[in-house]
Length: 94
Image (spheres, rainbow, N blue to C red):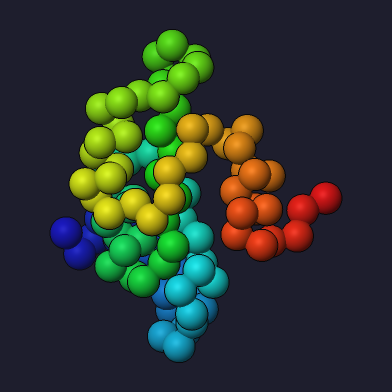
């Protein structure tokens, strides 16, 4: 859908970084397949968040499967793993 807010955000981000941006220059974090698919369409690195909000801990296996099927480049249990992800990607952390 052309007027979908998530699609619009990705198009605006793509416009901001330019069409010559390299893969990984923009990283999209999302816990739903729509964000992941839109990130992939824009050529962005996508990180699927597979946390189980209902139990407040652990991994939601159904969500994990949906994010894999949507094409997520990476999966992360929750945002507490951000430093580990940054190190794995070679980003500087403090």
